[in-house]
Image (tube, rainbow, N blue to C red; front, side, top):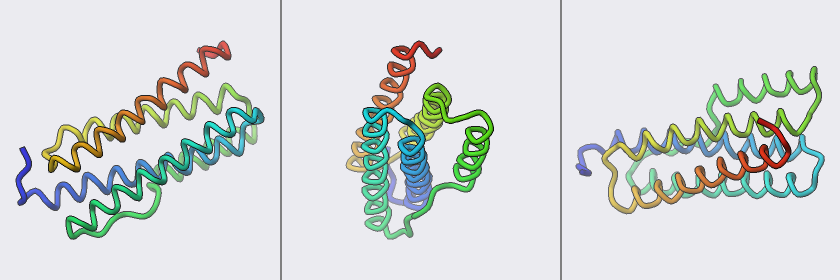
Length: 153
């Protein structure tokens, strides 16, 4: 149950989700740039935009709570993107690797959202986080389906 005294914890939780969304926005944008197939480029671009919109929504909630919202991807996310860039430079930008990395990123996003939903959140914030979590689950399932249809395990 939500307690107004938990405001700082809620702001911290939402800022973690903002970082997660900003990481997703940057990761999906990088994937869109790396794939050759137009349908995948469009899919990744759309997901990138959705992550950016989710971050904006979370930022508004932090401001409404009187906090300072995060605006950047996480340092670990940025380091991971650099590592992926290096790997693809050495091994090539193939669809399998791109989908594997996208799936890895969605697994981490799922974890962050699930943790947030175990926190006491105001009703309207919980509903927003739940809706965004369902989007993460959908993205993850779609990536799995793309990997399966491409014969990638």
